[in-house]
Image (cartoon, rainbow, N blue to C red):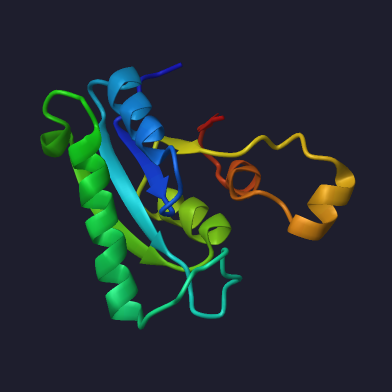
Length: 144
């Protein structure tokens, strides 16, 4: 495998995304890392207890969460190697599109176990990580 020049780490404000960022920084020490804060649209399904604010407030909050994520990663020069960007939309659509539009070489993300039963998948839908893997033309590493 050729070492990537640009690695994308999407963040959706979920637990353990710090691990994905740390993995990308450690595994690809010569790559530029983009931390993409995905802002879901107002009509998206909400997680438990979620309250959706106006778009500009949600975008600012997503960017702030991403900045805090970079600060928590115990990697030398993480702040110098990580660029933060934001994009609005459904993560399963936004991440592959961003990867294509920005010539990303590799995507690293945290995902849940995708081996759920058919019944669970029917009610909960496909996982974001599975959708990103299926739709992204570049390699995707999913940490579980």
